Image (cartoon, rainbow, N blue to C red; front, side, top):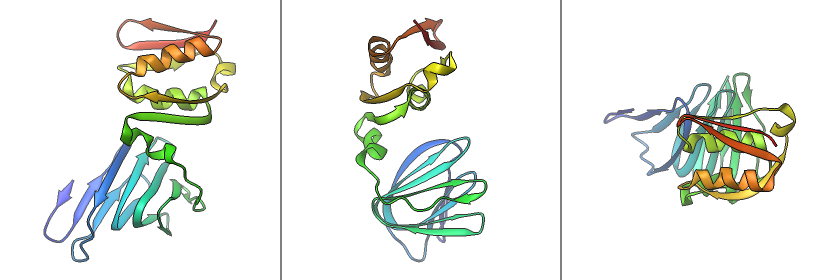
Length: 177
């Protein structure tokens, strides 16, 4: 993070962050991910950095996203994904699930078990591993409390044909029943 009289810069190496930024034309605010740079024009927005892509979602205002000599200007309720090869088309049908974590929940609609576990893993100490390739594709819809991630795992075990085993304090394994 670098804040000077001329600029405000943040580097986000991984994870997800929410920014509520006041526009200052003489002091731009930028967020650098691994493959993109987001420049704020005065807004509230989310940046999510994952190993294979980054996602920028605008809740209010405008942001400019640059990646691989491409540029996108995002308005409220728009989102763009970036990869090492460039920007995706702008998505304009963003729902409130993207920002649900700001209110203490994770929300999913027709996501794979693998995707859900990847998100839950951020809130559970150690690692959560899904064994069995056929399990990873199970489709999940639901809403889970971030403060009680173990309850989410218990719900998965109750509603899917899986067992959730805790192997010591740092490893959780989800496997077929």
